[in-house]
Image 1 (cartoon, rainbow, N blue to C red):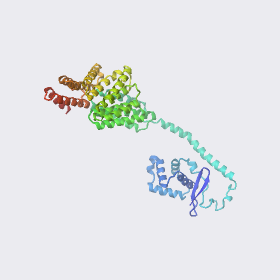
Image 2: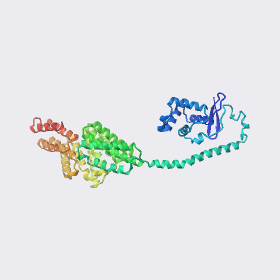
Image 3: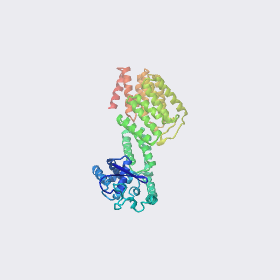
Length: 468
């Protein structure tokens, strides 16, 4: 049977059993844990959590449970300082209040440890005002100690907020390195860039797990997302779709955590391309739509994601949806400035988007079987690539544009011109998986439409040799 005695703001709960005397703190601790809805096992776990890393030095769980039961039975006069602090942290009650030096309680009807005399013989017991005043003085003294520590505690909070193992110099270095990786990977060997980008991605992960400020943490998350977006492209170009998708998902996650809409849209863009290569146009449409929720209506990324979705609809034979998206993209393109600075040296203007408005539509019309429109778009794509300075051209994208033009020409009955164009593409200094994939598609078209043709057979053999 439990009896409840009011003591200010804390209720003391005690067991009526035996003739022993209970320390007030033991009764109070037991009352508080029951108010919190904790059993003894939960209390043991809370104490260990309050100890943090030092919790490894506490007794094992069952031993700690037995010890808590002994404490609550009043077998000792007071806990050690360490356990008083742990109970205070776990229960959220200042130590000075939870373990205030008060009278001990007997398991009988309100008697105290004053030699068995009744309460009215206790000094001051006959005057409730004295008892209340004494309680107020005790609480005021305890709260004074708590408030006296508060300023120092607040200063420590401020100091920790500025603690970092990162620093401005490290972030500046990352800016330079990631700019170089993200801005130029289309013109370098994907295997070489992958090794460098992966090493930096691992280093950023280490920095994220080290002490840093909140602002630094967001910057690190953004760098992590950009590196994973680039690694997704590189893994895709190195014919590893599993790694490509894993890095794309990672980029999505870090962009979302950092609240970086542009990065999120780039992650959607690479995911759409990976999905198309995996012959999952439904997933490509879903990814493009996700990305468009994060970009303004008249943004180059909205344009890019629109043509990605258009290409996917074309693959599904949905011409109306495809052309509607292409029309929207053309309207956006017409409103873009010639050049617009983006992060890591990425041009977000109309000049940079020019190939997007020709490369992807050419592929879309090939999927729809409209080879005349595909030829027009592919010729414009090749011309766009050739017009750029050599130092900013993307050899792999230019090769794909030439192969798509070859596919359109083959479909229009010009196999010789198709092979000439494709042969130029296979001389590219950067033959990646996407180039091999489009060349294989052209090979299938030529073989099916022009069986037994000598030039077709020679192109077939050359493509197989390059693919091995």
